[in-house]
Amino acid sequence: MTTPTASTTARDSWPITHDDVLAARERLRPYLAPTPLRRHPLLERAVGDGLTLYVKHENFQPTGSFKIRNGLALVTGLDEEQRARGVVGASTGNHGQGVAYAGQLLGTAVTICVPEGNNPAKVAAMRGYGARVVEEGRDYDESVQVMERLAREEGLTIAHSTNDPRVIAGAGTMTLEILEAEPSLDALIVAVGGGSQAVGAMTVARVLRPSLEVYGVQAAGASAQHDSWHAREPRTTERADTFAEGVATRRTYELTFPALRDGLAGFVTVTDAEIAAAMRTIVATTHTLVEGSGALGVAALTVLRERLAGKRVAVVFCGANEGDAVLRRVLAEAM
Image (cartoon, rainbow, N blue to C red; front, side, top):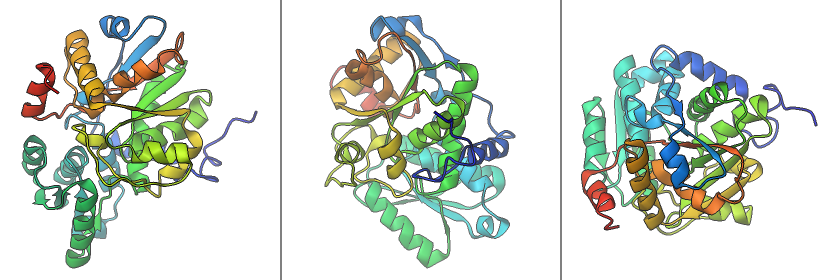
């Protein structure tokens, strides 16, 4: 079988090429150091013998999330006129922090739309990076509508968390680092909200490691992408009912769903109770903090363990920005 090359990866359902990811890494290089890829023997033992487990520590990023890659890749990819107008995004927190961080570094005004009652720690962090935060809408998807309205009314450049090739390319830089550190990896499990992590990973794998199996995982209470993948067509849900706010989406996205549909090796869901249990296991065995979405990869191993037995598997601690109240409930086993 012919290995795909960077020049062929966008001919079908792929929204970006490997070259786009390489270009994004060059733009990010002055601002971000690679994050560690580590093995934690106690975690490996806790999730079951029979596989070799690697952890990509995106929870060590300056904003506590991999989405700093997305925000920086987007803002550094804008032209001077777009930066001068300012940007507006919608987020439950991590994308907003990434864009706000980039705006502060590059002198670009940033507005972030968040749902009412959003995680106060994430709101405070976005404001700490200089962003204007607009709290409106019942969930992320309604905040997207607010973002679109402000873009029209104020002439702002949209910084969408998913439907932007620069965002997906920024997410792909994570998998560049993973495969450069561990080129013989067999499988990678990523949390799916909008899908930038997974599509970025598959774009890189098609060139550097075509045999790599990329698995998606969603919260059972916010399963629109999962349900759409199994149905082979876009579907929406009325609610996103999960405390893992980083994956609390109700629909698919134009730039990512076709690639998710065609490229994922599998797609599973986990319950909030399973996510909370995974968070406790991670804290106990690695002594590092993850938020709900950052624990999805470990939670998914309970579903995928037999399929991945004997393989070299990586999971991503994609974020660490959990609210105090939720964290106390998780650690007290009160979820």
